Image 1: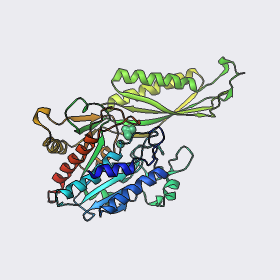
Image 2 (image 1 turned 60 degrees about the vertical axis):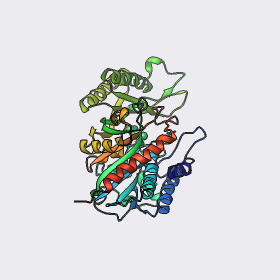
Image 3 (image 1 turned 180 degrees about the vertical axis):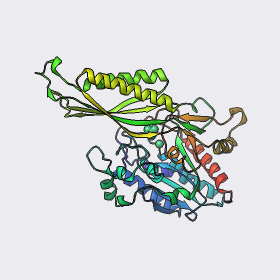
Image 4 (image 1 turned 120 degrees about the horizontal axis):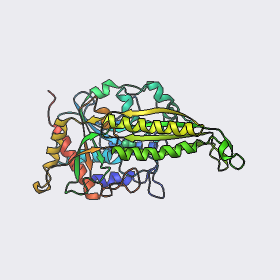
Length: 409
Ligand code: GLV
Ligand code: MN
Ligand code: MN
């Protein structure tokens, strides 16, 4: 299957010796991965365009209204897995090959997209390419986002040969899509326990990222009496434990996985610790209870240790309930290849964010998930068996054939 060739060509790009991926928006591995996409699309006779926000689109048919859109992203989290993002892109290109092999002639244009900065791995705000296109982030704020080395989005985009002055809402692009379907690796083990290689998304939990700046007082680790310190590490430690406890109490998720310590010396009490809270819950009020709980406990711990605290919401994403009609239509299409004894195609909620979630407020949107036997994601242990990769291609081809065969009314 053409998927295997595509996958083999993409696999070495941005992969570390340990097998994890480091593909950060506009950096060299990302640029190489974007070239992989462009070359593969051109080889297929597709018309490749870069939109005003740097997202790539490969068109089968004339770009314009009434289109069906699919795709995902190629950037990764630090030391990420191979499948989160790229699976949806490679399956989309292979699905075109499969449809052509079937002799299928689309009645509408198809656009295959690669969204930039889906993970927020370099500039901190996830789904930045789709947020910009959907008008859900101020372009000025996006331009001034910086990476760990202080390079701004505007500078990085310009260095990639694109114009950061033009970023922002793209109603012409989104208005040309009648539907968007994203295929993605499953980030859990719900399908692993079933006879289904492919499931359909039902919802995405509301979620967000909050930066917590604990400001203390730098001093000597050897000479400063314990009682005289204003050490921001201590309220951070309380906050990490509080987040864990609150998430458990609310059946939610709360994680502090990233921190910057200033000045980060073994023998210097820090002056500043910035840490990022990633929180997610099944509904908005539960999420709020968790985040407010963390904030309160962090503020108390900061006060107790003579430290000040500032909390900034860097991104928030509301609950997404995917269109039931579209979801059911996909489930019927995918289910047609599954033996009846396997039961209905599973409908799966997720705590993971996706460009499809951002677009869902603007375009009828749906998602397919492909079985991941480890259930692990954002890690090199993320996996999809080769047979299931092919099942993903076929499921997406079936879904696209269904959507593309209907003339626009
Ligand atoms: C994206 O993968 C996210 O949910 O963090
Ligand atoms: Mn991800
Ligand atoms: Mn993803």
